[in-house]
Image (cartoon, rainbow, N blue to C red; front, side, top):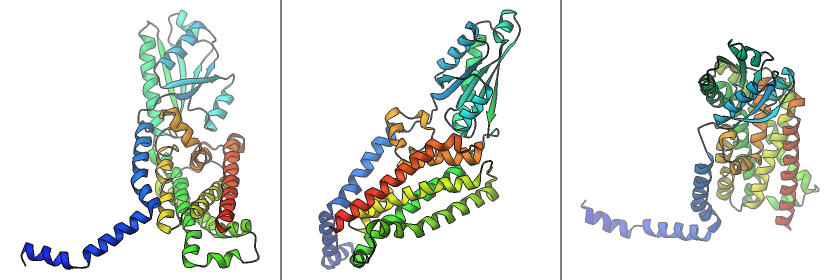
Length: 371
């Protein structure tokens, strides 16, 4: 068959009417079309601006037991590297441990009492920098910055020995940081996507009206729909933790019962987000696309892959409104740093508030839609 005859037969075939029908259908579904065209452009602009692989501005505390001009000069040298931002001073080494364990700071500069005296005598003065090595990327940048600071300080004819102690992940294994985060990431993606289809599927099947007329209030209806998914979420979480332990030797230093208790708020928050999406979307295609709106922000802005300290401040604010951002602090705090409720209560409260807010919005939106 020649090319001309093939084109002629193609023109007479039902192919073109089908294409025309699909374009007309796409034009009618303007919401889906707008998301397909607009969302990639918006996300490209946002993430291209937000993601920075160079790690800067790590929150740092100072334990200055020397309290001298020489110790303050050392702190200034550390700050001038651009990798450390001093967010406070502490008085004891226990304060250092508490703040790093809770994830509030990423590094600590410890200057001993005899620091200035050793410098004046021409002896080697020692200082210590403790780095939270749970994040290998951030800790590697911090270790390099300490080396630069020591070189700069010694350039001023000081004899200085700055020693780095990486905590929680001294081997700088990336799996120790990534695999715990996968628990939150996979829970967030699967729970939002699956739940977002729930109401839409009921609507498309024509069974939603039957549910509405049942003798049950709308809050109980919504909670009843998410409870089975919450159980599935816990099963999924358990499987990932077990495989992470067996395959990647992920440490489990903290309290697993505490982790499971605090995970409830995160699971409910994501199920609530999925329900809210399902009350907004009119079709399953729209529900799927709206659900995937959370995928890239969760991966790129929550701290799962890139340290949030390296991001511009607007991107950090956007990340602060993602439940995964706070859940990652809980996951890594318990599994890697052996943090307890005293260090994680802020993140737990934020997740509980978020869960209550999204469930309330979902119930209100569902009532308005059915009304």
